[in-house]
Length: 248
Image 1 (cartoon, rainbow, N blue to C red):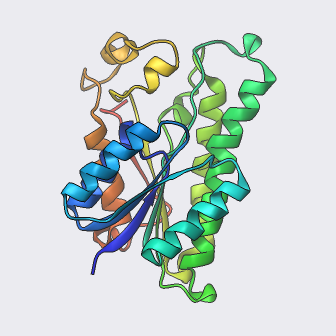
Image 2: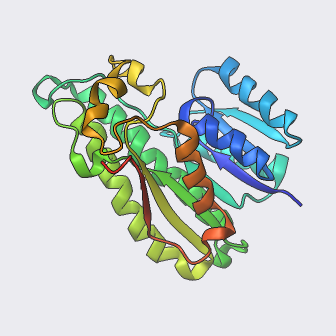
C-alpha cells in the first residue's frame, strides 16, 4: 500500500522535484499551488506516469480556511497522510531593510512562518496518537539564510527561516511521543526560479565562488534529503537539520 505525502508549493522548484521523486519512491502525492494551475497540472501528469495517484490543490498556506480545506480534500481523496513537506515559501526582491515596506514583510512572514504553523497544526491533528493518528513525518524547508542573515538581499526572508528553525525544534520535542518526527532541510544556493522572482536570475552563478564546493546545487539534491527525512529510513531522527549548501 502506497503512503501519502503532501507537499506545499509543489508546482515548481524544490517542491516539484520532491513530488516527482516521491512518486518514484512509492508515494501517492498531493501538492498545493498558489496561482499556476498549468505548472501544477504538469507535475500531476508526471506523477501519474510513475503509477502514483496525484492531486493538485490551489490555496494560500497563509490562510487558515485554505489550509483546512486542503487537508480535508487530501483526507477525502487519499486518506491519512504519512508525511508533510512544508515547502511553500515567499522571497521578495533584493533590497536592504531601510527600503522594505511593511506589506512585503508581513506577507513574507505570513507565508513562510504562519503558513508552516497552520500546516503543521493540521498535520499534527491527523498524525498524533492522541488524535487517533498513526504518527508521521514533517519536513520543513528552511534555508542557510537562517544562519547567514542575507544582508543587503532579504533579511525578512532570513528571519522567517530562523523562525522555522525554532519551530522545528520546539514542535519536534512536543510531538516526539506522539509518533511524529519533525526535521528541516536548509538549502543553500540552488538552481531554481526563485532567484528570478527576487530580481536576480543569475544569483547562483554570481555567488557560487562563496560556496566551498564552488557550484550551485540542483533541486533534486535537496529533494533527496527531504525524502530521507520523510521516510522511515530516518526513524531515529527528529529535531534535526540537513544543510544542502555545498559547505556554505
